[in-house]
Length: 119
Image (cartoon, rainbow, N blue to C red; front, side, top):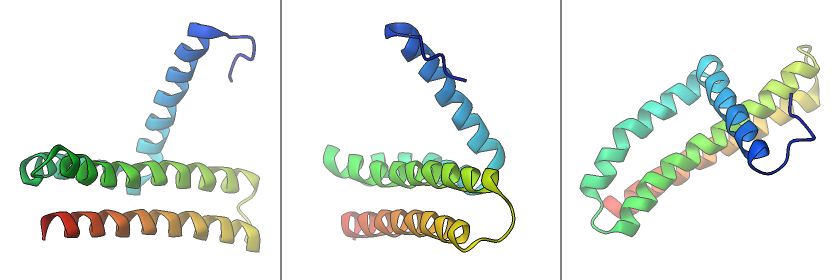
């Protein structure tokens, strides 16, 4: 739990530890995130090799980073929904579906970015 009295550098250090814990939890519990990290590891060298300018390389790599960012947020939403209750509820299902749609949009955006830059 966060220390509400932490200020300055101590607060930043605490935030880094919480962020690392978030990455570990997502890696452990979310197969989609592991797949997206593998996608990032494979596509980053390709982006560096195939991108003709620095901007193209940044857009290619950034589009995959965006997918991982959206997946982290989707995983957080799913964890909160599951914490509230595992029984079926229309709003819980809607929240999870919306998070899934956001991930899908980020994947489509990555595909469009790669297509327009490379072809």
